[in-house]
Figure 1 (cartoon, rainbow, N blue to C red):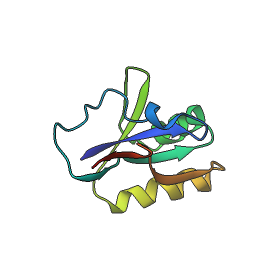
Figure 2: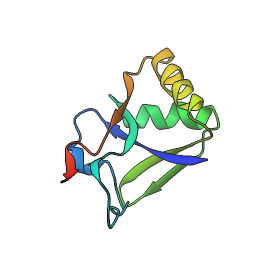
Figure 3: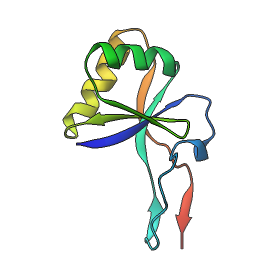
Figure 4: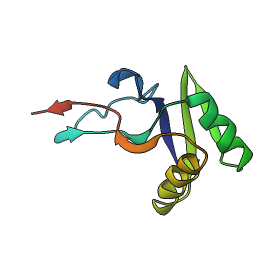
Length: 97
C-alpha cells in the first residue's frame, strides 16, 4: 500500500508533499502523484465512511491505497458523492537539470 496526498484545489503546489523529503539525486522531472479536491473536509468524511485508511501529519492529509487501480476508485467515489476530484502531479514544476 502507498500513501497519496490529498490537497485542496487552491493549495500552493509546494503544500502537497508535506513532510516528504526530496530525493538526494534524481534525473529530470520530480512529481508527487495525489488527489486534488474542492473540499478536503468532505473528502475525509467520505473516505472514512468507506474505510480508506487516512494519515494526517504536519498539516498534510494522505490516503492509503492498495494498487494503482484503486486510485480510480477513490476518484469515482468522491465524484459520485458530489466532490470535484482528480489525480494530479502535486509537486508542480520541480525539475533538476
